[in-house]
Image (cartoon, rainbow, N blue to C red; front, side):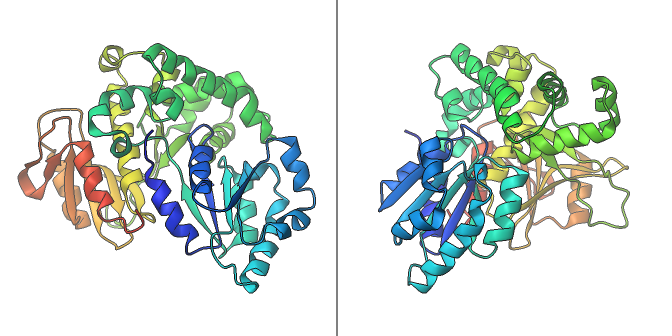
Length: 391
């Protein structure tokens, strides 16, 4: 069994908040984590994909009043958007009754519906957490090659063979396209969305060029924007914004786009083993996206992520602005040579970066020129975790 970092942070949050909304894509392990937490306290679990559990909540106050003082876990809560108003009243009544913390744990596949409904009804009453696929510091540094190839979805990562893992991811993609996305009431042809998703995989880590994508799909630019918004909302794609605070510099304004789980990138491209990945043109973008997702997951809650690129060629792959205001400039290279470009130093100087890190493919930590520290991904994640007071 792999211990999740979120187990501790969720327990701490439930000890100080009335409720927690745990978001993440399907099959990422939300239910397993919630059930582990339920085993440690008096709790009741409801899954709104089961008709019997939905019927229990047809009159929510009648049922929830009977559960006063217990932790109520509600899975796939976005399937009953009208429930949020009742939950607001329940939290307020429980506070007046002296039950101020640990009352609700709400699980949901991220969507506009879920976020909007909960934000409107539960503002100031719940804390939001995002559960990602497995990260390198959860699986262990020795697992890097497997985690990179298969991605971090539990059933994919833990599969007995690479072939079984790829089959699971292929089925996962098909299920999302043919069942899950239509369940949100969105009418997008599954084959069109698959082609769009695959195009993003081929351009992993590239600047968004909506016009080119639209031309390739034979759709409008508005349709491309809608498809991208959907995959971002479902936490399957990351739209990494450009740094924009330097008004005196001519900076790139387009975001970079990454498929968030490396295993899904490889499944969309039919990459089934490490040797095939290392010989594929996407290897650099895949490695960059893999590192970025792990670094963001390890950063303290409230960290803002972006990238820097100027018209003069100064560039930083990842900028992390920590809640303290400290700015980390991180370069990512699939190389064993601990060197960064002159453009990285120029950009880091412009930004006044507090930390300058090169994440590279060697296992050693070595000092570089200009205050840059070269280190493996696991070491960079450990430094970020040490700044997270919630973990």
